[in-house]
Image (cartoon, rainbow, N blue to C red; front, side, top):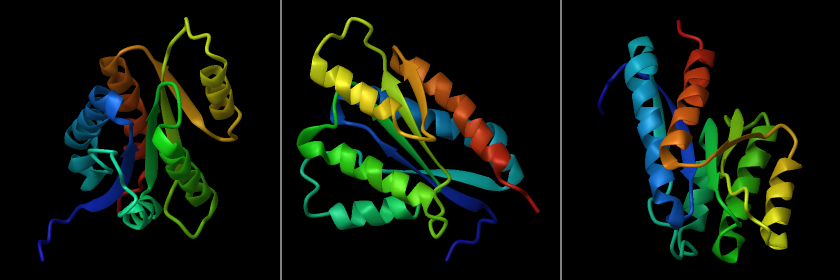
Length: 165
């Protein structure tokens, strides 16, 4: 057993494979907040999630258990719920955990890639569905580095919200 003296808070990052650069930007933002703000206070935001979102049917239970153990959930979206509505299921599980005090989940944040020229009715309906979710913080961005910059603010707020002894 390694004794490190840090209080750890898990952050689940969910992003479709075509948003890998945004996923990386999320992880980088968490690392930066850890280094500059959290670690000096003996706090560690721990990034968890799938690196590849191929066929997870064999590990869905493990993914759900990971989500249930997280304090925060970041969902990166662009234009749909992904194959087989996989991301819808994970997203709604995170919302359920957020709304149930038996779980540590405090907030669900959506990073939504902006697409002002989008006209597909299905994609627009998907975006409207997200906007209708109560208590959801939606941050829009155009480029991966912009997503990371927004997330620096979010993660800084999270780290600051953790009381230290």
